[in-house]
Image (cartoon, rainbow, N blue to C red):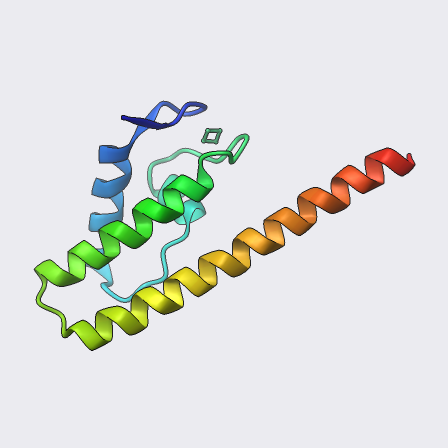
Length: 106
Ligand code: FES
């Protein structure tokens, strides 16, 4: 299934990249920009990023379950991951809103 139509990137490609990143450092904070940079791609319209965030959370959780990481550690990490992604999404929406307002006043 194609997740990013700008770069023609599939869900499988994204999952594999996330797993490779987690093998290097299981506790690193992965954001869409890191995934795309690792894949030598970059967000163009960034419309796929919310879906990529969901894939990051899902894949990270599954990775740690397979590694038999204690569930309390997984829950803490995934909660922090979701909070970070939510903060990023809020910042992105605010920036988009500010750009829209600036265009209206110009
Ligand atoms: S859909 Fe992924 S950058 Fe546009």
